[in-house]
Image (cartoon, rainbow, N blue to C red; front, side):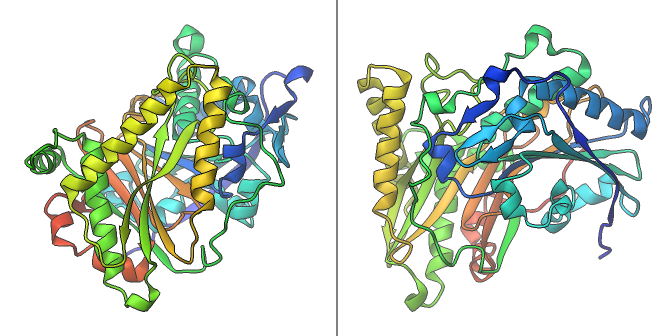
Length: 444
């Protein structure tokens, strides 16, 4: 199969259209921001051809509107300095690129994850891990296919942005490009350290020494609307299990398949406990204190499920346990009838205590992160809505599944990253394949 070749045409530094005021020159990171690994939160948006606008006009519109957007999102034009961001207006990276040997439709027929990485601007920095921790904080790459279609790859350091944050940024930028910014988009708030305690450089969490030294692979599994309804119905057939949500159903099935794939390895390499880490966006759980426009890592991360070396996962039981954890979190937030910072401190202490008890020698963590219900398919820069959206992190972490809505809003796409030896077992799991298709064509 022919390899896609992406050629960089130009690279520019885009600065905010207005200078950041002196009183906003330093942004404090929260403890949650600080403990995250040095990776980027990334999004890919694919658009079909617009015959009315040339590639040069498209790129110019993107750069001009990005400059205007950076005035609102001023920390993204700065640089990280320890546990703060120096909002110095140094600027973001914008890369213009071309694909000469592929059309957009041919790429989307069987989207290859390695080829997908070529649509990110990370080839413009020598060490992505170092770059994500220090410089630059925002990189964008606009790649034009030979048919006129386009991909926009956006990278924002995870030290500032979770999935909801990158969605807010893209929504604002696209509205600015289309001329709809006005009152349609609320101004972003950079106040994560007012919720979670401020970062402390002395604090460190346990580190997995083997991380990024193993050979991992990422594959795409698509749960179509019809099959997803079948999965939800099956999970609800057990006594005392109400009909689960789409995300609950997919999460528990993936967890079952993670455990089965890991158990197929030699037992001497298997940890005593496998744990499922789930990330919860707190904005929707405490809307009176946390606006949707709040930028930062406004998540609660916890081990929601655990199983021993010889255990097998039952989906119905896993859904009950997931719901119990969700209810525990709701009660904890409700009981803390205080300020935003009081709730944040309580949640931070709980997370850090729980994580400090886990050892990579005895616990094997798997993470499921849901981008579902984020309005990324509404990102219209003036040439229509995207035909496909992908969310992930870069460099890709291992033992992780990223869930995102299909374009119809009914199905779910899961991007699963596992060690190669686990993936070979995982992708052949018959229960998984009864509900999910492995990398089907993206319908445009």
